[in-house]
Length: 298
Image (cartoon, rainbow, N blue to C red; front, side):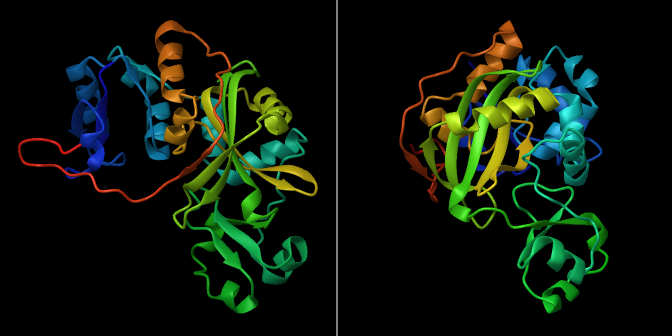
């Protein structure tokens, strides 16, 4: 396989991890799509996999144009992608389906109301966001009053459920018909930036029923990431990421290679079988990657 990687930064470390590196504009730039299409044609790309939310949403909106290049795009269900773009709309759909995994959520930005409904402290999170960006833990009326009134219409409130050490990221490979053929679960600890910092492989059996119910409800396609917290009232769903998530490198190291599964699905329409998952734990840390002028230091 030949891997083409992209970044908006010319000095990105990405060039050290792929066969060909291409700088691209920001996803919201006016010339982004033209540059992407030109890149796909230039390299005769067979399969394209979005790695960030912004690309996923843009590609879903312009899928026909992208696939006109001959490239097959690994994208989840358009309906699920649309629902996940707005956490409130996604919550409302869970209520409609009477799913037991929904965390009670509120739009009313009144401190006394939220204190009664959610307890203290409670969370304020952007309806549109990712990676725990913009989430605020509110413990006092003074803190709540200090939040910019202009941002409050973009937020929703939730109680804090479970404990930080009872959070799990579960990935399943789904068939678009309400089933999945492979699954892996990690207990995780988040970094301050909202991404997995430490992870431990756990038995996926505890999550199989919840993932099955959510697959039947939302019919995801291909690699899909479910984030749960364990509580005294069962599993609660933090969110669904309808794409390969940032923990994919950790999962691959333990035997769950989503990228390869996605390529097999795109090229051969082949669903994976459940792989043997090794047990263990992973720790992410800062590392130096050196680029000499005439060679790469490995």
